[in-house]
Image 1 (cartoon, rainbow, N blue to C red):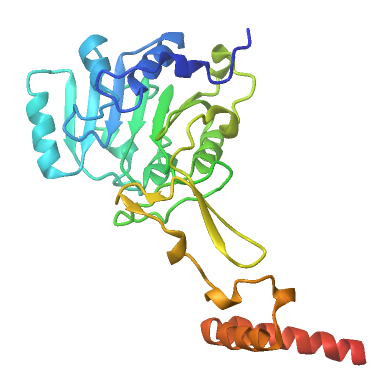
Image 2: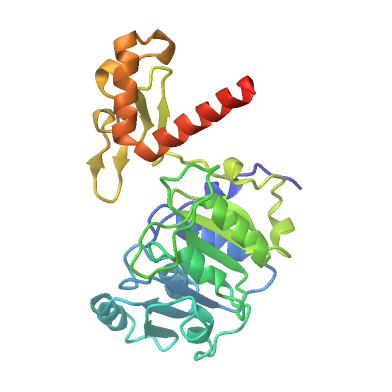
Length: 300
């Protein structure tokens, strides 16, 4: 039976999660034909704040591997779960090579190869960590994407631990298909995937990211008028820095040149050529060479 594509959003709820993940995770796991009661969270912080696994551990009696790289957060994580023998806390930064991949870390635990649920939230290299994971194939995956990137854009940051830019939803969907996963739900910061053999159980006819992504409130759009003025629309902030993006700082042309080029006076045309040459000399000279080449061909 086919359902509304975004039907899983009706189950959003938070016990410890940030934007409804707890309820959606519980519903996804309830649909799967079998559960082994194991979960993994990469970027676990203290095990409580915005956790996507604590509810499973507390209310569903799940065993867990909780991984946190920051020593201070890991200390708190260990303290919070010191009483629970089913929780394995790991202090490690996960990389993209065989020796430091998530596969390597999990191989040192008793977790099954097709454990129930994986959450990846490391503020940058999420894509690369998932891409490097091949030995283990969780049934369901929740992974963070950069919510400021428009849905139709493909973007993946360089695989460097010191870089925090993230990946677009579309790029994660592409990676998911490559790894045998299908998108089933999208929250403001997180995308949910299930292994492709379970996807028909969710009754979603069209799981395109533009269909499943209901929240686009973090996106800032940039466009230009015919006169060269740059406009901003949408969120218009750097969300993590809480700084407003202002149109006045985005303008490429001086005010006197913000006109449709065909309406330039002779003086304005001259000023534009000088401005173009000073701001983009290499591009300017290339354009001049191209124009001269076309002129020569016409005269030959």
